[in-house]
Length: 398
Image (cartoon, rainbow, N blue to C red; front, top):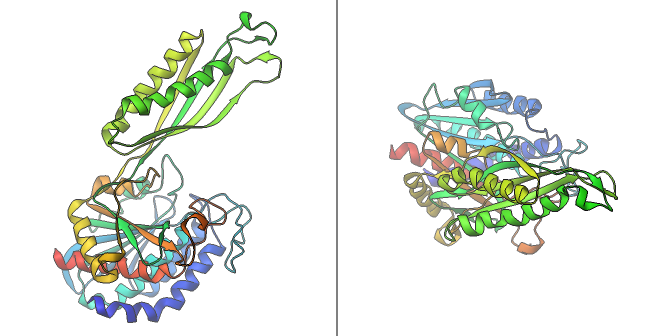
């Protein structure tokens, strides 16, 4: 059936492109995606499929039942944007001040809508059910939007047997796709440390306990959490992103607040990070006469690709783009992705869709979460084709 997909996609390509442009022009932040959700629901209803709104907030699901009974496969896209001022200069640039689709979720949503349109045309040849999941709040770490949709029953009625998803990836050239079995993306946790000392006059440090000096040593010592507690064959990062402390140039600060992120790949490493960080931070602070309290907030778990689904996806990709265009990912990225919550519940497969124009060098392509990020529109029809083909191949194989 793969050879039949390109003409059907071509028939809908103008509509898919227009939908992407509209979504990009009217971006909405996490948990505020009501307009995007309404647009999605409207397009799905045009196909005649069953549509459910308000799942876990602004989540939307479309249910396409084939001509024959069979398993249920889900395809997922995220809908939210980021609080950034767009500077792409693109004709479809954001019209909402301070909000931008800087992570490509507009492409994800448009591609999944395209998949819904194409599969609706082919429903008489589908054995089973396809569920289209449009998810809010992917950027709302540490809670995300996937848990709310899961608790709202999106994986039930009918029960989903497997799920596929993808993310545009600017380091990969348009026309290529990257994936691997096992961990593809990392856990994303939040770290808050409050260092306490004793205030005094800046000219009399012996009468105080300098919280800023303690914080500096804590930050340095935290780097040993990775270098001496994580296997060199594993991957982890502890990064402090903000430091707030001190009120005046000649006063020894009595409190400093540090905020950071902890990224890990293996669930085992994620589990041991809080105790190691707390032990080191508190030990350094006490050794310097102060104290340190920690709040550790677990965010997204590692995104784990099911081995069997990955083999199926690689076979599907080989038939669409050829082996030479498949990027066999060796090391997972440490960026967080709340598709990981789905991967903890059911067999899941996630891919990176190349979106860097062939004429643009890797170093010249704006990365994700950059106010100049602009994925290649030529990646959209390929994204549609891959989602459709993965769904059809899964249903045919099961």
